[in-house]
Image 1: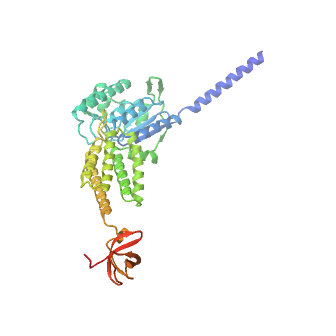
Image 2: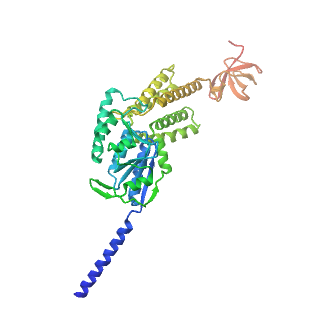
Image 3: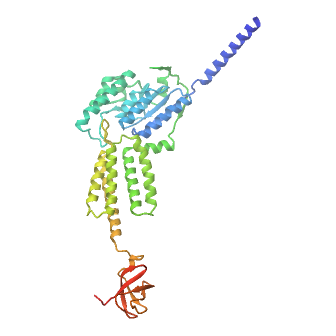
Length: 433
């Protein structure tokens, strides 16, 4: 019994030592850094979510987001805030370097962090919702969007213990403040001159939120930068509403050209690739599908213009449908329109001119008299090589043809092809009226 008890004690001691060694081996030895210096779009969101997942996987002490953004999509911003607030590790947002900003949607991303900091010479604010062209939202929708945004910002600020009144002011009045003012107003946790200063200031900071508690120990830890891969960079580019719209227009134009001029191949390939890229971007953007249907209706009108002599009416209907669809494409109830007029107007003009030009050329080609094949022989002139009485041989377009006529025609007489029937040419003397 004593021997058995002794072995048990030895076993417990060994297990304890193993546990201590394991826990010390799992201790974080680095901090991950990620740079978000772009507008807030679906590509940015995907990159942030991947960075959080990688940081959890390699057991980073925390994830530091180096932020510099003019704002962006509200729906995307909400998803990013949700990812930050529910991350299984501390998230630090640092508005950096000097001259950077956390404007519009960037305000919410900053205040959602477990630890928020700004570099000297940076600013935060101007969070009033605007359209993609920078104009105010139409009055009918403004109140609805504004109230929803205010409620969301209050809940985030309250959850993180930040200045709710100032956040509401930034949204209602587009207020913007410097780094020192943000610290004094309890909008951020500190002003840090650089990354070394940031690490020193947040070392020992205790993160406490629902279901999560941790004290940061970042002093002397390795800093690893998570760089965006080619996929992230591509998604950042096509995730912009203006780029997605241009891809859609180029894709439709390419396929339309291929359908109206079969066999050109290259426009069809470019159009197909552009449409696939646009489809991926549009599924992540707040798209009004009524606008998308108007754009498809425009393409159908341009295709029918090739087949039907509408004297320009179908082309006009196509242009109007294209304009309406383009305006409506990103106007979703409860979301801000994000397609700038500086992109919309020239794009609609160029694409409309392209569709109308191609439709006109295709229609003229169909109406043009055939110059090859059997139909191309109608109206051509030739010469009888044998007497037609009423059948014989004629020489037309460098070939001998069986021919017949309504009256006998001597050999060596100029004739004109009037009809083709069963590979026989019906001809008529040219001097006959």
